[in-house]
Length: 524
Ligand code: SAH
Image (cartoon, rainbow, N blue to C red):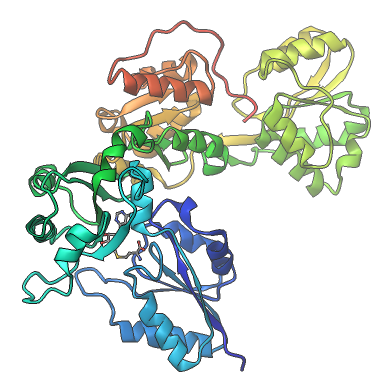
């Protein structure tokens, strides 16, 4: 049997964007993933579903698995002809025992490759706003393990040379020995005023940074209660953070925001949140389900050859309409003579993805816009098919019928509360891990309360409730919730801006703002 290969892959410090393209490619080809503690377990989803995933890190309360076991495992899997992705935090060759694993593979004659990663010290410096070298400050850099046994008589670190011979020092695994590290550096000639930064959970939404001096950092860390994992950066360059910080001063940094739409629907909103520094926690309260009966939509599909306009007002409507069309054994050719109206660019994109271009998109991406646009077209006597959600407003059918059109508006899908999921929401709220909950329609509010149970309003007491617009706010308030934030413009972008304002004004309620348009979200 052909021997496989082991890729020693650096997974970076935590931010999932900080794995290399090559690392990700290797991971996606893996038969086996061997990992220990990972700052970001999301990487495991990148491996093929059938790949074996083997955890070799610390078990709860126990020690790390012996390195020999890990070495033997890598060897065994590769000998079996498999592609092994050995994922390691940061860079595999920086305090990560990657060297030991590579040597074992070399001795065993197993092919291996090393994919470097962004090491914690470099990442922490970048995300804390500290250039590790800068011509005006320092020209050398040292990475040091702080994981020395303080009881050891002879430290293997040459403190004298470290203290005065290297510009910037970055200590890994050094939090337990912080008093020793600072003492030794000062004792060996580094001034007590030397700036120090402690960066914990670097590159993640939980990043904490403390700046101090060698002389007072121990006390400050104790006061702030900062624990591992953290790196200790020592050197004048730390001063630059004041000007160069960019990560942890974004408006919503560190906020955990519960998003009540599905991850697919919320992708754009999650990205907006991330740009402002917030972390989205997806707890969908909306799922789609089939209509109670397909007969109305089927009748509409059967009459497509006599239909003048097809109106689609959401990507869900596009999905269910085309799925049903296919189920009936038909395809886009049935739409040859039909003019297609998409409520907005997202719906239009979903239609294009089916290989057909929408004919009309209104200027205003909502029901009113669709009605105005169609009226301009002259619709008296025209036949219109409008496959819709069960909860959609009656505006389109009512107005178009009043203008003389013959309109069929069959239910193409229903929006329902997903089964399960309520417990997770309860847990997150009870653990006070959420800063804000966002609602983007009345159904998200109603379903949320149904999923969580009668004490939902109490659980939301300490959380900022964010509503997309007045209709949603009305529903929330009717159900006993206190709405803290509501934007003036009823879009996701508007909601984001209102949250930024809200947290900037720290706690000032943004409410009672003038109603502009009903906040029915079309085109999502
Ligand atoms: N191979 C890894 C280091 C492993 S040693 C790398 O290249 O980054 C583990 C130490 O790395 C921790 O004790 C801590 O000092 C540091 N570390 C790892 N991830 C970190 C993070 N996200 N923020 C701060 N320090 C981190």
